[in-house]
Image (cartoon, rainbow, N blue to C red; front, side, top):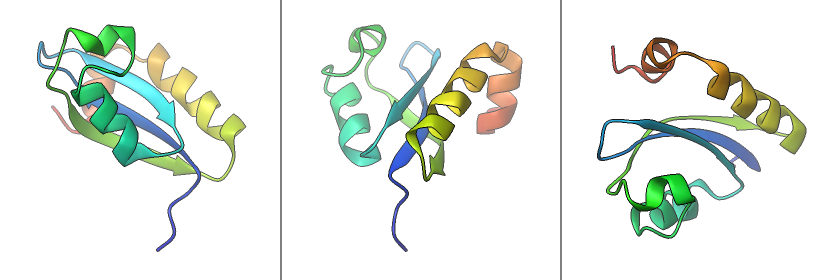
Length: 84
């Protein structure tokens, strides 16, 4: 199965917080976050664990979904990723 080019993902950080991001290479990006080389937010919250991802055929669709997820409440995000 070929992977979609654009991925929206949710990580659970070591402090229990959730981080939502966008990438074109999910495995590489999660490894970067986990190594403290990802986004500034996750650098001091390692290790991280991938909790959820969605794949899209276009960058614009993925970026729109990333924005939607970021607008959710903590409870809604927990329901989305199956933490509740």
